[in-house]
Image (tube, rainbow, N blue to C red; front, side):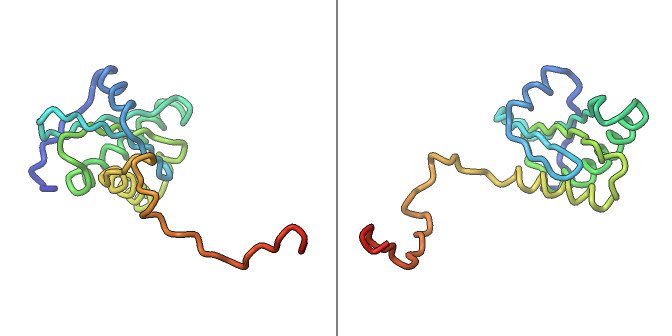
Length: 142
C-alpha cells in the first residue's frame, strides 16, 4: 500500500449495513468489518461506530476518536484498495493502552488482507495425515 491511497468516510446507514455483510475480525478492543466493493474504484472507505453498550456519549466519542487515529495511521499500510472498513469500538477501546490498540487494529487489518479459502474448497489430500499411534487392540484383547 502506498501513502497516496485515497481514503473516504462511510457516512450513511446503508453503507454500514453493506459492510456488515462482508468478513469481520475481532481483536482485543476492536472489531473490523471489511467489504470488498469490487467496483474498480481504488478508494478505501472507513466508518466508525460505538454502541451505547460501551458507555455514555463521552466514552463513545473518545473510543471513536482513538479508532479514527489508529485507522488513519494503519489503513494506508495494511488496508486493501477498493474495500470498505467499519471499525466497531468494544468495551475497553476508550481506556486501552495506545500501543495495544494499535496492535489490535493492525492484526485485524492484516488478517482481513489475507484472502481465506472457504472450508469446503480445501483439498483433503493437502491436509496433514494423522500420525498413527499405537494400534488399538482388538475387541477380544481388551
